[in-house]
Image (cartoon, rainbow, N blue to C red; front, side, top):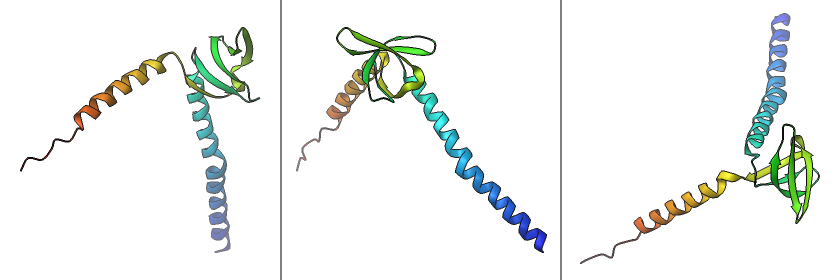
Amino acid sequence: MNQTTTIIYLAFFVVMIVFLFYLPSRKQKQERQRLMAAIKPKAKVTTIGGILGTITKIKEDTVIIKIANNVEIEILKSAIRNAEGGKDVAEKKQKEESEETVNDVEDVVEPEVK
């Protein structure tokens, strides 16, 4: 009976370790991969140092971001905290706006006829 209780506690401990450490790290890894996929020219980025800029060029391990007129800096890709936009985002926004306009026209309520 004592060995069974010990084995149950050990199994419970292993399951807790998996839930507390492995699953959150996997989620962070997926989020980081999503971020790296969002890095495209003309994307707006924020660095871990708080610098805001727009990506102008992408190299293997680094990106060049424009932070002001005639001011560009080269940073590591790993130093990017978040990225929004990019080349294809403007096209997607225009497409979504045109779809919303069509939906708005379809949502017009007809007056009731008595």
